[in-house]
Image (cartoon, rainbow, N blue to C red; front, side, top):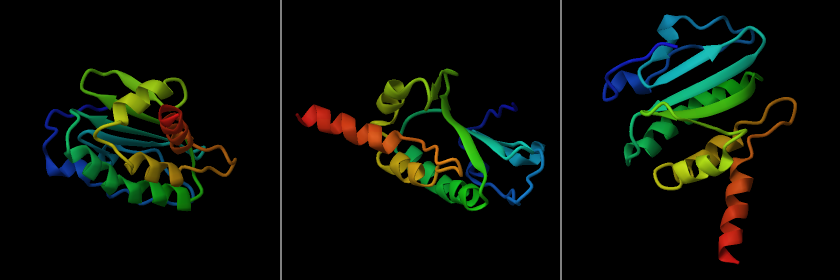
Length: 143
């Protein structure tokens, strides 16, 4: 996957690829700094957000990507994996490292991940369950 060196370039928050019912293999022009989208012909989509540092800008960056996720959902594509990768190349996966994801998102991401979770429902009813897990953890702390 192509890597870029300038995380402050405004281009990193723009994405112009148009989704169709039969997506093509993503080309180089579908990759932007700190954000890459790979589209496979089997309607499997993997989205990777490269976040260089955790700060107040992260929540705003995620808000700009909610529309992209909604477009994928409306096109009936199946999202099978969503992962976050920061500057140390440590990956936090929804499937295997939920605790790490919660710690990673507790500060800067806020409720934006819950909003993203709402559009991550595939045709197989397999959901990204961050919001439920997050609420359960908060209830456990309150008790």
